[in-house]
Length: 303
Image (tube, one colour):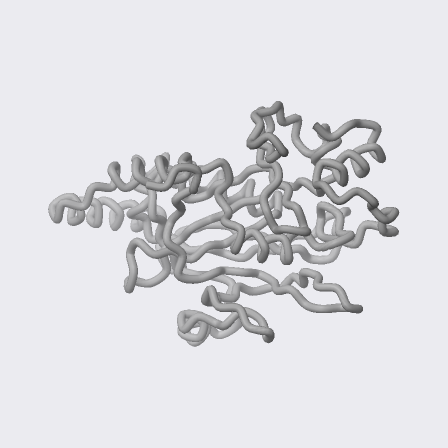
């Protein structure tokens, strides 16, 4: 495989709980209270809807707030990858990706390995609007069992909940996560930070009308059939692990441009809200120069 290029699960569509709208000449994210499935084709009117979007809506009486899914991998960390990330809005390129202990940061001399104190303790991260960023791959339907829909999020609630559920379901099923019939669920909550208005996050549960015991029995039966057919799940997990580790950053330039548009809007804070008055005009053209200038506002220096 090409070295330096992260090999990620094939994507056939997107899952979102919001969209990007234009307000006062700026493109800003707008949250929703239901799921939307789209293709990977974007026009001037937005993302084209995937055919499964309509078929799933016909199966429910209200808004689309649950999607039946399976997972590609038994390893929870292959299905959901989450890091602290920041992007260069000018180019859409990933700039720095870390896990709270170490990070990979793009510099003029290449990719550097540096300590990662998390966004709250990092002057570079605060200047670059670093935030948690997760990607979840799921299989919907039976047409392409190795093709996935991707759900991207910068929500602490979604990332924390999805990570916990994936590890719990893997544990209780005896490492049969890729065999379990599950569903994505949209849940709402309110906090003091949201001024008691509803905010929505994504959860995972057994499918409606089923129980945990039913799901585990189904997973064992499917596992036996696949093994009899020669399906090697361990080899699939191993191939995915090698693909992810093949590159410094997971998102390609094409994908990261859309990520920046949706999750890193100009003059927005880490919670997606507008973050006060705009900063003074930046006179430096290099990325490091812009980061150093922004980092000075936080009493530190960008590396």
